[in-house]
Length: 69
Image (cartoon, rainbow, N blue to C red):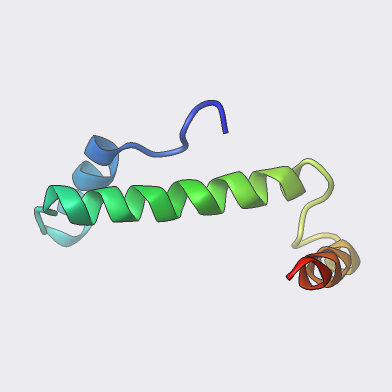
């Protein structure tokens, strides 16, 4: 993915605002990695269809992914 969806400072700011918790750097890095992995994965499928309006495409995508495991 060229540009990450989230960075360490953004995730720390959001968690502080939403939960009033100051994350340690390591925890923020782990959350950033997870958020960016999800964004990278699902952004590819967002180009094809919208899951909530085309459930048959979501089922097809899940079937394709299960074959790759």
